[in-house]
Image (tube, rainbow, N blue to C red):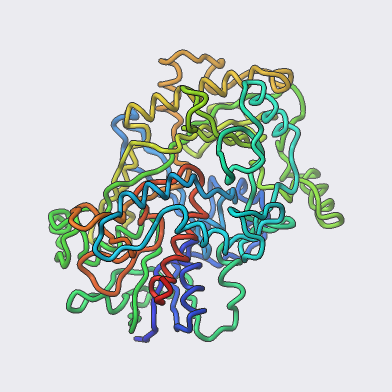
Length: 539
């Protein structure tokens, strides 16, 4: 079967949903090809459902890293959404955009291109504001009328409040808006949900277009490659849900939005990438772009856990009679733990120079939580976890092909904490929050610090701990980055166009020249929104 559309969007994740919606609203006929499942499922809809799924779910792809030599050969997971809405359908829903300086940095990196558009803070802010439907904030940084519903936590656990007070006892200010004039401080995050229901990109941008004949969404469709004709992207080859090979043609443009691990894989399978690497796998190189799959950036995260001396937190709140009680409370009154994503409290601090720009972001879920490859290293029970994240890492990794078979997962080497500056910052962040655990009112509720062992905070103990427990903060980025003309490692120009190919753009987190300081879901949606404007001529 062969069909023709105005535009084809490869990947129905956060950026793909937004890009597709924007193109349809401009009058185009758009096909969205998504490899995963429908986003309509009770566990996906309710904010705390993430903790039921993160360590094993059909709605996730679990990429395994190659052995990481600097982590003593350790292999760890990088979960990615396998569902319409992508990360926005399976994440913890924290609404963060990063700092204005993140985007001004992009602007500086791109300045001087022949055909450029602005990527500074004043250029991207209108997209964030137009998308945002904030229930509490309205000012020059926040919008209230957008489709993406942003809310305060529907429920705040006592452990989250104690964490906020303990960090204040360390001298950090209380911050009422991490997307405001300053990130520094401790407080409560805002989330992409409302009244106990997740607001994913699929809900915010595609659901309003239900029934619009210009939008075609195909699930369980795995793209094999992009077809080129005279250096123009003209069609997409994919396998449908029955495994049959299909081809869809585009009269206009093809937009890559499959994520920072799969987008470079598909580019390389299509003959767009490092010529030598493609030749190793018997792939004819149509466009030699050495930067495809390089510059992989991710936020490294390291947890610490503490066991409580009483029944504090969310332990077993999704099981047995507690689940029934919480479900009934939500059904009757619309309140209780079901209205929270479970990560209410957080902080941005600089543990080395306390007055300087924050280098560490922290989350404090009121449960004992570890990743799949470290489960079992601490006993289950009441307690809390504090995760520390290096927000502007210097480490860089790569994505490579395992083979020329589209069914094979790519080889991913994120190199988390490989750069000594990242490790130094992480150790300082761990030490800061270990001290916070010893502050009132948290200290009175803690039986013992379980990870790192016995709460020791010397450099060597913390270095060993970081190497054993570091994991992704679920923000892989940068593998098909924008850059200046003449930069051989820049895959895209400043209009998100793949260099050397007409009619092909990338609008997911792959396009980032550098990662933003904070969660990446809102920036992914911004990229999709700007891509739609670029393709349709509004920018």
